Length: 607
Image (cartoon, rainbow, N blue to C red; front, side, top):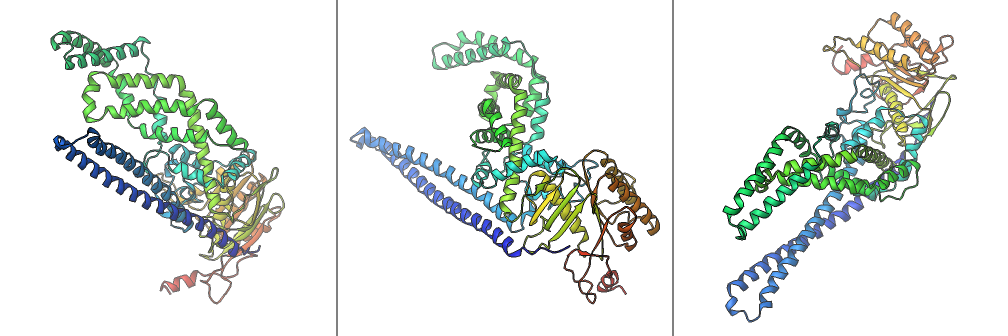
């Protein structure tokens, strides 16, 4: 097994993307400064014109022509328009700048501080979500997630947690390849919604969609609208003196009583829905603008064309825009000056009924539209990762028996310039598994995780950190982060045994299994461990699985040469026996010959 040296080309590729981002960021920051200057000039002009208008009004007896008084007011109007325009432009440039600032953080290794962990998507009993650092702080999800919506983030998480079959992985890869160079599109997605922090909450949407429809007689919405309009007209007429309050009051009382009675009858259902709808205004702002952006895309890959065609044919953006306006009206109703009038006129009830009418017509389509947007965002997030890692390669997919081959494979969560790369070649039935022995801190766990994380990336449609790669579609089973659970009264050994049982069960599913087991069955004695490990590995490879075991226990290396096993022994240790704490992190053929446990204890002052 050799080590692939690609440092110079990798560094140059990464630098080119970083330079691209820096140049674009510099341009946008210059735009922010320019827009703020123009905004300040417009504000100065506005104040000046307002002062001139006040002076003109105060000295109107000295003004010869009416136009002289109007001119400052006209200037104030123009200045106000310019102020608002450049204020909006400055905010836009700042948000675009934010996209590149976060991109540079990812390129420079500062992305680990992000609050996006994906832990809300974790699944009980999942076979690798934490073992391979797919979810959690400084995880693969944290690196990849550039979505603006919770729906998109959820879809991205499912890509990483549910390995696709070959057809699905190939389809994703084709779409990602097309989106890699569309950085302008990712800028536009960063602008979705009114605010930088605004995101679409899929849980809130799901809860609202699942609420049963509020059913009323068809004449109720029209009757409420007629009553409200008549009440408003009568109030205006009374205020204007067209009618006296004495004349209008009896009718107003009847109208208000009718509206109040209807609203009270519907009170419980309306209030339940209003609580949900108050939270959805921002969410649908993101979704509506996202759908409008999606339906304008000119794409060629089958997967993307299907998404675009779905939202175009159903006029998704137009329909969601109608709903967004209703939700905006609900938000305005909550404001202090409008709350009492809206309460008297049953505006809340009318808006809820209008939303329910919309939902009755488009509920199933809405699910499809959200699904389209989530899919597009997940693919675009992976394309962003591919754009920022131009030295990584898209793997080839192999049908049939289990195969995993890679040249110069490195861990994608490590800095590219310092990441040590190794080759790996697993074939069923020729060489289905490795036993990797070696000393502490030599890099065995990182090697296993590099294999697993790159497989997850490949099946999600992303490029992998390698010079070349080809693989089958796998069910992935990893065991490296399992520990005792006092809450579940479960020891580490029992928890690991259950994980291995799941791996064995998966071998009967018809899909190849990739097993990555770090320090297999370390919680038992050497003799039992040796016997149990051989039995487990034999069952795994009999089911068509391939994988890697790591161990400190050299007795386990015998498993590779046991009759019918066809395994290979590799090791990781210091290249200098005289300095057992210096590592090159390279995988070498054969069994480990040295240990560094005593040297580590001595380093810690334990003799």
